[in-house]
Length: 459
Image (cartoon, rainbow, N blue to C red; front, top):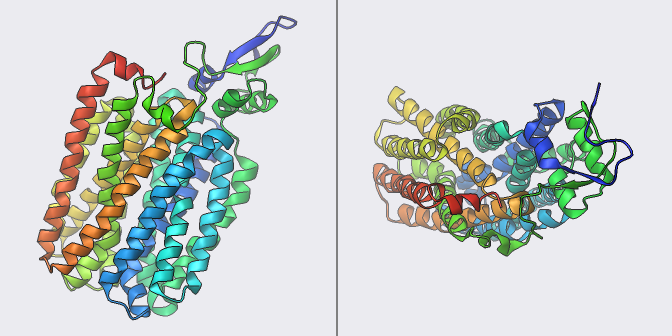
């Protein structure tokens, strides 16, 4: 028998939707949403990182040296940065699901157009345009998952979905191994453009808009009750006419600058700094690692792609487990340990004989810590902002991370032009995770240990 939430015939009643979400059990609705978000994150990661794995072949097809690839990587990152700042906040106005679907359609279209580019400059421009819409995927998928998941499963849901992103980033290796010689670098763009379009109707028909978003926009929206009924069939919504986000929560109209208000400025600045370094590191390695091994180490693209897949195994394990670990232990300390091991793994990758047992172990450990660390940062950030500005907060944090990624490819190009030894290039890269550790230390000291600033995370 369903449990009533309001007495029949009573005056206008309101319900805190956040309480219902927090107390629910995992259901089929969650599994479908989690699966679809993981799949679309897969294609987001594939589209972003596939370029780095076939980059030398792209340059060669246009008769350009590898150093000219810098403009491709930089413009892609500029697009990702612009999209995070400009498009992600739109979902706090128009809805997470709506913006996510239109972003998928747009990035898929620009990915397909790249196939017919007539020069490396045109490739770079189209990658920049693609990046604008790719940037909206993770913030909106993260916001949807965070706002549907029960309180005790939020970090886990985000981390599991991020396994799709990790898998997509690794899947570009199969293009280099199996398709590049026979079908050219364009084969990766056919995959990255066509397959995401198949996900759009599934997202449209089988997922729901965030009830927190609907409650903030229109507390009397009847769709809220229908969605909550799918999540909690045991509840009776008789007499409930208005839905709120909690009587004690501060009401907010959303908006970009809300991430700095109500005492959130230190929180936002530190999160931006962490993202700047973390995504900058990932971008540097995703863009240049194949080229470093190819030109500094004499390793073929196909051989590098095959060996680098072991890092995917580690990355998949990292993204699948980090949420559960963070739900049980101090999150910031977990992340600190991961990034310390990340730095050690990077240094060893450049020193150990490529393809040996020790090298494979280093790749695995590094993959676990890099992917797990980034997934953990995403989960931390998603819970740092209230629902009214969650997508904006996550989107702008990613924007700062993408901004860090604008500079990272430039550093890789400089390292390549200086003809550094392979181990020297990786030792320099290992410094970046160490700076993340310092920022996490400040986050714990200045935010989590200050009751007032910690309270600002949920206001």
